[in-house]
Length: 161
Image 1 (tube, rainbow, N blue to C red):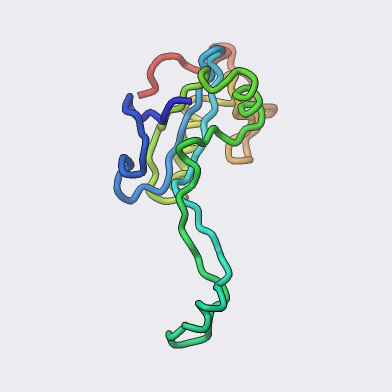
Image 2 (cartoon, helix red, strand yellow):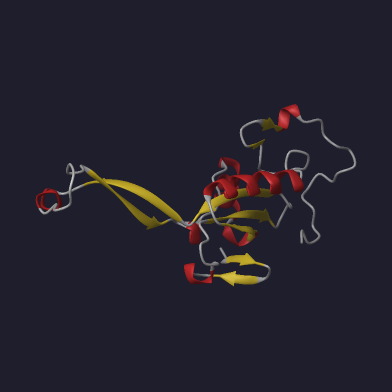
């Protein structure tokens, strides 16, 4: 699969993200049928690890000795292809060359990622068109939304900017 694109520019490394960026909202498009998936991805994961015996023995700070530490690790953002099962099945069946990955918005905290993800899902009307998204924020479901006959059955093909 190609690299992530943001406004036509390939994003290949963390250094290309704006300073302070913690994640992004993205759209994956199936180029054979026009179906889209809008989601969010964080750039880093926080892992909680148990302190080793050596680390606890060498503890010289005041207060009790902690048992765990938090580590920040780069996520799998560069080769991430969405979490939707139907999307994953189509990628496996058709191959990565039939999918286009695009960054819609950079986010500077996790709440902002959630907000912009939901905003883009509403803006692109993912529950009204033929998309991989079946829910928005776990509150709005495709089955509860009356289809709009004025909308095309696939995602908008013109630029979203």
